[in-house]
Image 1 (spheres, rainbow, N blue to C red):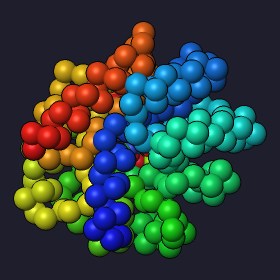
Image 2: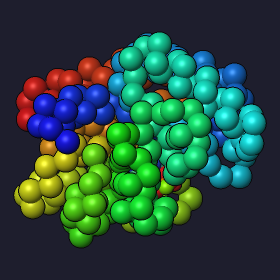
Image 3: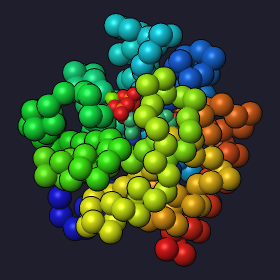
Image 4: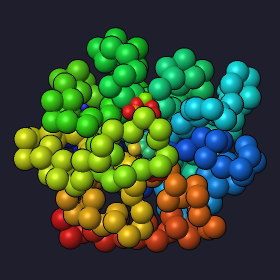
Length: 224
Ligand SMILES: Cc1ncc(COP(=O)(O)OP(=O)(O)O)c(N)n1
Ligand SMILES: Cc1ncsc1CCOP(=O)(O)O
Ligand SMILES: [Mg+2]
């Protein structure tokens, strides 16, 4: 990726909302929450329809298309979690994969021209992601999270600093247990953005939470 494109992506990943219908009371609530979070300042969205209560088949495709539409209408990046075929079907902007989601070289080949995000828990994983052509890295869990059953142990913001000290120059997004209270710490450690599920999907006003978080992120970015 060109330097200017990396810079743009760093800004576009500032407040990265990750969610599926199972994080909300219903598919209708999911759409409403997504729209409100975007109106508050979300800059990127990841469609993560995963686990026990997630939608399958046609319903899954339909809701993914609606989420993409909402994102497109508001200039928000639309990324699909895990599912390469779904990413292609809805013509998303990109795909996010973790360490257990398949061979990274093959996935990179299959996502040419799209944004590829890769999760890294350790420096070795981040270096591997860089060498295989990832466009950004999701670092975490930073803090304890209740939103991912098979989450690894929290790594703290020290892991973000470690990546930067070791010249990981790709956009870095912290994820896991990030809230309005601790998001500034994540950005001040050097992350370009914060990815959140419950901080925006599990609150009374996603718009207000998103607006507050977005302000904190932009002001912390000015202080880095
Ligand atoms: C931005 C971002 N970072 C990390 C993850 C976690 O991905 P993964 O480890 O593959 O776990 P699942 O989300 O697939 O359960 C992510 N989704 N997004
Ligand atoms: C998908 C994912 N990957 C690492 S932690 C996590 C869950 C983040 O959810 P929350 O923001 O509610 O802690
Ligand atoms: Mg995954």
